[in-house]
Image (cartoon, rainbow, N blue to C red; front, side, top):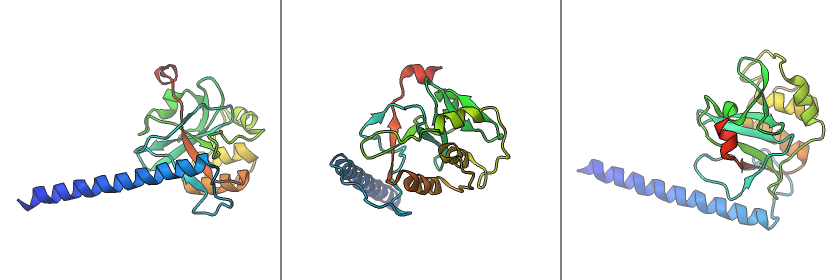
Length: 199
């Protein structure tokens, strides 16, 4: 008899927590649209809106050449890459090969069905001028892949600014992006058309 009551209590608690998170996300979106954004970014504020598999975003964004993109890997680690154009992304694969792939291939073997784009508070992708040319030049090169010292985040950063620095985590990449673009980072859902996911 106590076990069903425990399950019921847990379900009610989970629903309350989810509703609270949803309200926080809605308030954040209202502040964002009003231009109420963090004036200075710190380590804890670098990523203002994180990618979320549980809460749909308020606006989907179309990628632009040079957009920084990410997806989930087993619900924990985010995998990053660079959008080139026309269903083509560049990524550092776990084998060490830098390759150009489709959206479907980028998501293959990973746990999300959604790609996210690093944006400013106005839902515009954050892009640097030399990013596309650096990413294109890197295709078919090999790196000694290491999960902490030579990973996809380091590759994205090197394409962004031409600097080779070990970046151990997605959070650390966000801190560097916030410093580079001098603003907090918002990860918005990418607008995925059926043509992109079916190829």
